[in-house]
Length: 312
Image 1 (cartoon, helix red, strand yellow):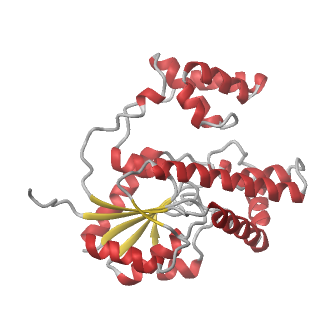
Image 2 (cartoon, helix red, strand yellow; image 1 turned 180 degrees about the horizontal axis):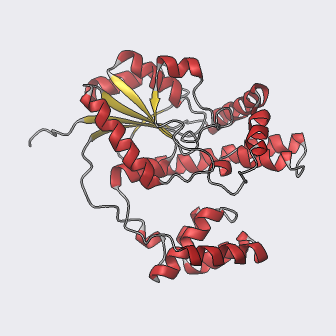
Image 3 (tube, rainbow, N blue to C red; image 1 turned 60 degrees about the vertical axis):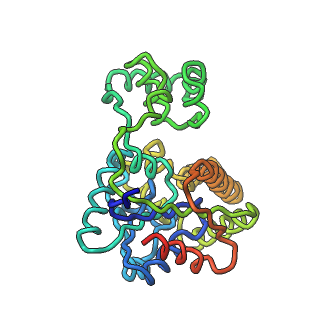
């Protein structure tokens, strides 16, 4: 059987707070790899503390492509990410190095490797009507409608996820078919890279939960609420924007609106982050071709290095 002649790439995936960035930087110390961020919050400028963006010292030593690409008021889609990631990977290959893509946004990894189904363009008229209905009845009412029309999509879209609810209902109106049935095919093209997938999956969920709580408290101490105050002070942002629906930011915005007290905000932020981690773990377990590494097991960098030694 002929050898796979495609250039190599590494996907380092894992739930939030599993140690992905630290491991990616450790691997870059050892191998000729360059880092590419795969994170739907880190593409936005100004989302730093609450999104756990690598600090300036880390980025000076270990640059990450695809950070700070958009203003929080601007949209950024999985299709945008795929185009940007492929371009970054090509630049890294041209430098004689290997792209190592690191992050926790499963939709981005999947869009990159499998491509995107052909879906209809946005229909402003339908979107405006749906937004008007939501203003009267609330997004949960539209979620109930979606649950009838496309239960698969409704199961993975939250009842207050305005953007995704709007898009799912819009696609159904435009095509007469459920969105979920149109998202499974991908482009059908072979991915032009030979990929090693490393998945950080903790055997003990309690350890991950403890790290999430500790990190959230560290974010608060580092000025997370001040960061959100600065975003609010711009005057052109609202919590319905994709950037500000990121975990932690929604809860902080509610708190600064006076909806929750400090203790409730903290509890809700930690709970939402744990729920995000749960969804990420569920997605990762479906990646059957990934090599699983327990981030709490001894010698994690050594085990990851051995996997790269065999692959590269």
